[in-house]
Amino acid sequence: KAGVTQTPRYLIKTRGQQVTLSCSPISGHRSVSWYQQTPGQGLQFLFEYFSETQRNKGNFPGRFSGRQFSNSRSEMNVSTLELGDSALYLCASTRTEGTTGELFFGEGSRLTVL
Amino acid sequence: GNSVTQMEGPVTLSEEAFLTINCTYTATGYPSLFWYVQYPGEGLQLLLKATKADDKGSNKGFEATYRKETTSFHLEKGSVQVSDSAVYFCALRLNNQGGKLIFGQGTELSVKP
Image 1 (spheres, rainbow over the protein chains, first blue to last red):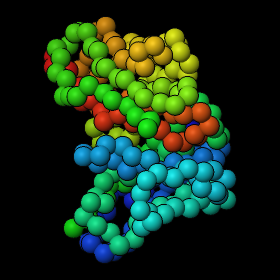
Image 2: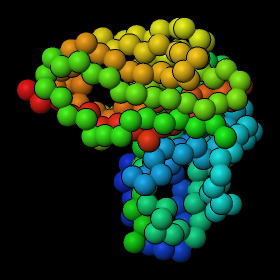
Image 3: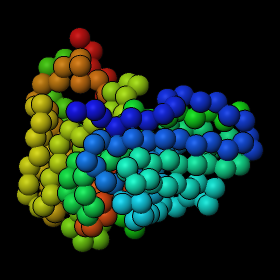
Image 4: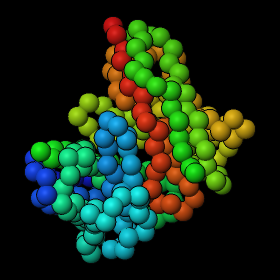
């Protein structure tokens, strides 16, 4: 079956702009989580959505937001981009909430802020 | 707070050498523990997991045992291959935290022929 699909794979923005990233989970998966990966901070949890509701949120400023649609696809948005937002943004999906099940990760969207 | 600490890399080994990557954690309650691997240019793949104390996770020749008394989950492989070259991440998930994983900083492994 198809894996987690993230678009776009690469993008370049300038400071002050905003960006929207998309994630399509594995069919049947209802939970989508987002992570930011940088060389300095490593992998950090942004937020998780389950059945269109935000379940968990990490310690990121309000410029980072997300949403989930009824088909479980998710988007995350970063407004007023800063240089430090340059990162690989990873999306992961899992079947249900609160389980010990596996998270399946996409290949990521690499954002460069100039 | 909850955290994961891994040994720093990069780790460079010769093919067929023994691998150990140390991982210790701090957590409230009884977390599930995971090892993920990231190959160049790719996302993360689950390598193995353990959900309770003394569980041993294993996959592709890699093993890790959930040690509650030492709060550790060290990754081992008896004989590494060049194809094992990647970045390895140890992670924990607290009960009922769904998609929220807390990751270590990652350990880069390079295996030379």
